[in-house]
Image 1 (cartoon, rainbow, N blue to C red):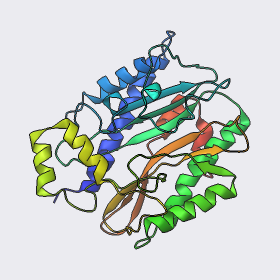
Image 2: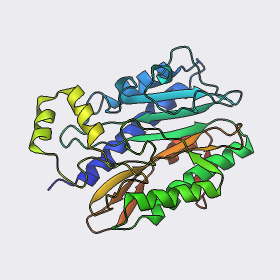
Image 3: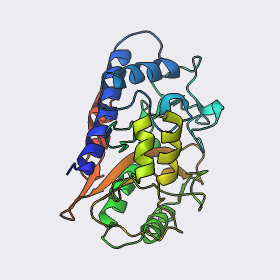
Image 4: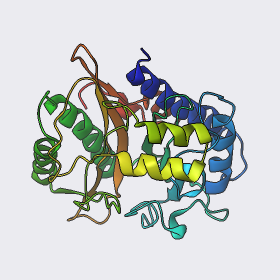
Length: 293
């Protein structure tokens, strides 16, 4: 039997590795880097891997890839509510500030054989503002804190309520807005088919390679980590933890988000997928490698 959790892990690693390779090439050149430039290089690197579909599933944005740049003078672009509107799609005339810039990147590749997704995304910061660094570390710490609270047979609503209480204790608010989630806001979603199989009808859509129908099917198959969702955590299962946190009392602190995936293995062992460390090292964010995050 194919281990779908291994497929999820492998697919996510493809996204992170492709980003690292493409971004390293760009960052080592003196020429300016635009959002579209980075997106296209990342997409080309992804397409070298024949295990995944040529495009990613979360679309729009085009190709299922998000690249947003902002700077310390204005975080409006990366303080987004949704990646779907055209204004949030990668632009040719928005360039990276390599000294104080702020980036949010996200890609959502899909395994061709299983239809398992391996979403990956993260916030990158080139500046040295101590308050922003503190916020970034706190945001990533919450991913680990929520992960540590995960228990078998706990409902997603219980886990989400715990997470939201933890955020509010630090005067942070989750700014995720979803058009698919009935609750309107959430901290993540299931990886479709990680804990149940695709139906025969759904499998036929993959076989026909109808990309638009595949996108809709994946989108609608997800269950969300919201305060309304009663689905229980089980083994095996995979789901994301990807809250987007802002400090409502300090507009100078930008929205930050680290997209992680929780795997609940058949033996009930928990695993948190991050795939951030090499990018932290590349971009001078070594402070994020602290084990005491």
